[in-house]
Image (cartoon, rainbow, N blue to C red; front, side):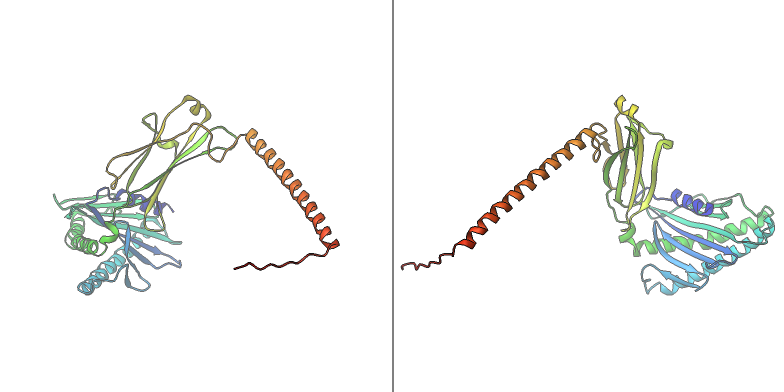
Length: 355
């Protein structure tokens, strides 16, 4: 669980914040031990769209969209080479870690995120993170502009400079160019998905809290794309502290769009003080910052005072009583007219209009 949270955190760090920023991320998981899962499973993400799946049970690459026949053989060759190398490297690393940490039994999980970036079609930084059971992290970065190479928290403390230099050469000259090539190619294939622009729809909500006279106010932004959004709650033009906010995660909708909800508990004392609460939103598809003021005064929708409820019930009871009396009176009248018809034979007459 800790490892999954770590990977989600890394994904959030790489969330694109500009229309010209795109990323390709490879998420690989190696599992050592008896589980129903493949030893190695790999998911490739273009921005936030899954485009490739691969695992060691089938040794096959599954594409989200039909691969361009012009590049199909090349795509398969690149994927097979990279994923097989990933399998061998992660398997070796797990064996080393098990010996180093004296893990002889149980299940060991090693997860990796590796990816590259394009900003306005110019190659950006190359990243690689490794996580073992959510505890130990190794971070590798390469900057193409200044050829700066960084390796932090490496597990192999015995690595010498020769081994580190070899790692740099492999990633700089093999994996990084392949990553940029695949990123550009799939940007063209999936451009209708990853380059769409949908404005958020905003809804303000409030509800009265049980056993109190306070409120919970919520600001919901939904149906937007891309996923990055800045949603902030303000009290009297000052941002509300994060520890007072409920929610705030970016969640997927079922249609490929996203939503975010932030809520705040407002006590009776705060309501009496007359503060102004505002929901502020920034998104790539909004021309300007959007500010919406909460109406925290008056009766909360769906909540009524006791006197109002009693009045409604009394009115309903009186109405039912009157309607019942009218129905019974009408029935008695109909019964009387029916008995008269039985005592007298009806007179049938016919007439013919003159033409």
